[in-house]
Length: 128
Image (cartoon, rainbow, N blue to C red):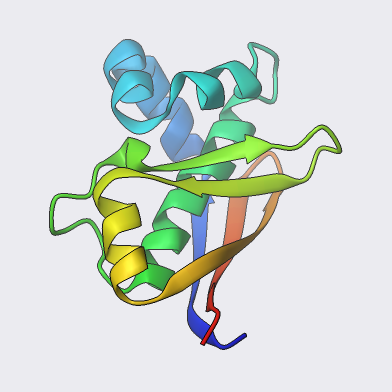
C-alpha cells in the first residue's frame, strides 16, 4: 500500500479564537461541518479542538497536493471521531474526486493540541 502523499500542519489556537470572536457564525459554517462543530463542543477547549480540525484540513490538502484550489471547499474535508475516540478523515465533494483520480483509497490522521497549538498529520495511501 504505497503512500501517495503526506501532509502536516500546525495551527495557532489563538488564530482560531480570534476568528471565532470576529466572525463566529461565518467562520464555523464556512470551515466546519455540523458534525465537526458538534464534536468541538462548547467547553473551554473548544478552540483547541477546532484548531486541530482546521490543521487536519490543511494537512489533507498538502497530502492531496492541491492546496485550496480546483474547487475544493473547507467542508469537503472533515474530521469525525469513531466511538473509540480515534479521529478519521472524511473526504467528499471535489476533494474526493481529485483523491480518486490519483488513486487515494485510504487516509490516516493523527491530531494533537495544547492550549497554544494544534497539529495534524495526514497520510494518503493507495492500493497500487
